[in-house]
Picture 1 (cartoon, rainbow, N blue to C red):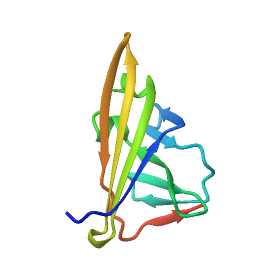
Picture 2: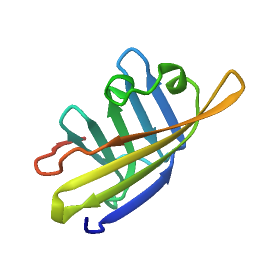
Picture 3: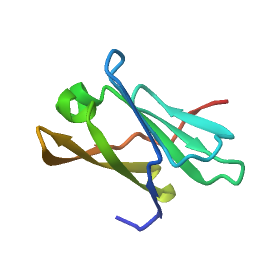
Length: 121
């Protein structure tokens, strides 16, 4: 696999919507525009085209992450690897939660294609 552009972001805002099963993470900067990748993810960018956040759909179902972990997230890091030559994006989200006074970690990996994304504002 050819190396691409890797972005690492610590999430300042972490929101898990249990009803919609959507995990939203961002680094606190203002979104200028976003790109939707089918039913998998929306990636947010700032005005300088830097990736600043991500929304992942179906987190508990598609990625088999326990909802108790998702509702108790204490910190999260986003690692986004974009490989233009392969028209692929690899989104890894590392979550740290505390459940019953124990620290629990999990990783969510999404690989939406980047061929024909829909742009949203």
